[in-house]
Image 1 (tube, rainbow, N blue to C red):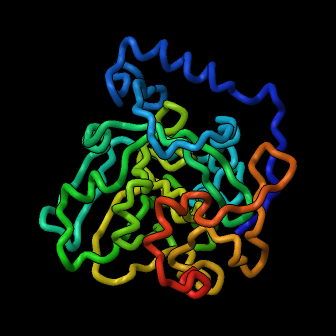
Image 2 (spheres, rainbow, N blue to C red; image 1 turned 120 degrees about the horizontal axis):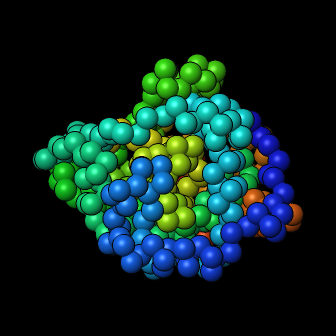
Amino acid sequence: MLIQTAPRIRSSEITPRSVYLNRRRFLSGSLGLGALAAAAPLAEAKFTNLKESPFNTKESETPYKVVTTYNNYYEFGTSKDQPAKYANTLQTRPWAVQVEGEVAKPQTFDIDAILKLAPLEERIYRHRCVEGWSIVVPWVGYSLSEILRRVEPTSKAKFVAFQSFYNSKQMPLGRYAGIQLPYVEGLRLDEAMNPLTLLCVGLYGDILPNQNGAPVRLVIPWKYGFKSIKSIVKIKLVDKQPPTTWNLDNAHEYGFYSNVNPQVDHPRWSQATERRLGDFFKRPTLMFNGYGDQVASMYAGMDLRKYF
């Protein structure tokens, strides 16, 4: 993976929280709970009246400009600035997500059904990249468990496998990614059902930009960022641990669990500290990225150095 120095952000580039909230209050008069602006083009649609999550961090949010221009999305280039330049070729309509495998009721959900499946929340999460940088983002979505419960996992379902969209015509830089595509990821079923695991459709009150994983992605705040797979087209419940892209590429450096753990270093750099994008000084990395109260019990008795 390429490592780049986090950009320094001028104060003039930071959108104040008050401005962000006032914009949404202005829009709320014409749109309902979690609704999209029906008359607006998809790229300009806004979410309004979002439910606030009890899991929200009170930390300062990373500027929208940074979140949407400093990305890992290898299908659109391996440099952090390339996805924002080249992801405009991704076609996000029509879009469908297949949910299948060890379930009683396999279903295919189009993006409109996903948007209406449950009330949308704003989840202000810390997000930690294995490369050493971190962000705080107001994501939009709801718990992944909402969609999993509807397909009724069977007793054989132990893990959940995810697959991203890949099309060489829409993603010509994917041939230079250096990893197997389409991108695949996986979670243990209890991890997938944890209320923190977010099926995400937006950020900062807007729909997801292409470079951030439009139109639907995962956000798993206690795991390193590469676990939060983008542009999902398939979810499959399985009985055995599924393959994951970075583990296939280099199992020595990228474990299946990939929980944020300051005590387990990446072979090429320490995980003990992190740099919040826009900050000058580093800060200590928190175990489970600070979400231990919600997730630590899932790993009770596990050797987290072995199961990294």
